[in-house]
Length: 278
Ligand SMILES: Cc1ncc(COP(=O)(O)O)c(C=O)c1O
Image (cartoon, rainbow, N blue to C red; front, side, top):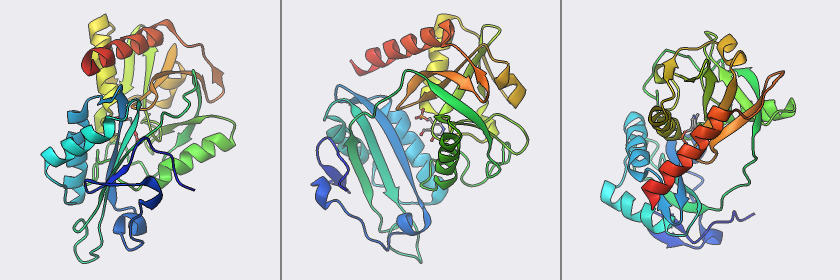
């Protein structure tokens, strides 16, 4: 099945028809999940926070010791791909073809994906993520690598239990993030979100939402929270490039309403995006 894209696929800057866009089966990205990626939202042809996404890509590549083209080329390719309109700009950097020198002779793939259907709200199960050593760092801490198997398995497990997705809790009982999103909630009027030193991804939407909260005068608490903190929240929401700020209407067995502060943060986020991508 050919995946739909808006416009061509760029492979190392070369525009290729999506039907002909292929990579080698010998690429270590495919064989070992060794590589990194980014996903950016484009609004009317402009990628939101392109610089921050490229900084994170550079950090991921550095941690993996993977070669990246020069920044000016990445910017040019991203801007050309984003120009297709509203969508999700996907960027993949593979491990390459040389098993003796992983990270060299590799491919940078970019395309603009049409926006998926985003629901009005989501229902989350709380699942343990034993692979997620909260608090312990490794050379891959904070890197957005191609090894997303455990994340995907958690989403599938949550769906099999009748939820939309999962809120992950680490081996020490610390609340972390979702498989492809950050977590936030409102408790006693404050925006609570797990601290980055719990070994979660430095989400760009989370950072922007914290800025919005500060502008709105909503206090922000970035801490190490445990499951009972999440379960006692007044409002819960997820944050990601694709979902933006999205209310959560169930956490495990507990039903919730989309709360007023969540909706204020969501609207503030939309205003921020509009001002930055105008
Ligand atoms: C594990 C994880 N956490 C959080 C996020 C949200 O990050 P961002 O806001 O930069 O999209 C993602 C995005 O894919 C993710 O994969």
